[in-house]
Image 1: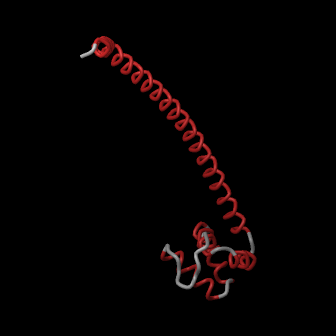
Image 2 (image 1 turned 180 degrees about the vertical axis):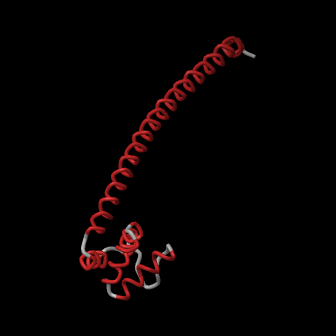
Length: 138
C-alpha cells in the first residue's frame, strides 16, 4: 500500500462515522419535513371535506324544501293541468310527485292522463323500478 492510499483509507475510516451520522440526520430532517407536509395536506383535505359536507347538507335541505313546494303546487292544481304537466316530465320525477300527493289527488291526476302514461307511472310507483318501454332519464 502506498502512502497516498494509506492516507485515503485512514481518512475514509475517520470520517465514515461522521458521514453516516450526517446522512442519518439529513434523512431524519427530510422525513420530518415530509411528515409536516403530509399533516398540512391532510388538514387541508379535512377542511375541504367539512366544507363539502356542509354544502351537501345545504343542497339537501334546499332540495327537500323545493320538493315540498313542488308537491304542494301539484296538490293545488286542477287535475287536468297537473296531468298535462306530469305527462311531459321524466317518469321518475312524475312518480315521485304522485307518491307524495294524497291518494285522492294522485288518483284524480292519473284519471286525467292518457292510459299508457298513467299505467306506466302506476307500474313505476308500485314496483319502485323502471317500467318496461320507458327510457331512464338521469
